[in-house]
Image (cartoon, rainbow, N blue to C red; front, top):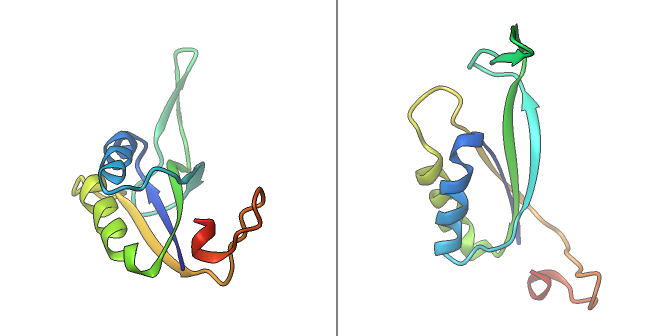
Length: 112
């Protein structure tokens, strides 16, 4: 089993979510994240004043999947999330030792 973490642009979330749904990925965890990178911080407007922010706001998707699904899921995220500009994000894949569904006690791939 694998865990895919994808850091993506907020503006590309709908396209990525829809593309994942087309390949049968209908569940993932979503987090608001902030970071630093090659892309400079964004300008924020608050009560008419413009403030430079040192961080970049992004979303992080966490997806658990079988080993066989990894390539298709990562390629789908990359294709749907790519704008060609600095700051498109990253996709990381990690090994998962064990997963247990709390409700039923199912483990590993049957818990996905």
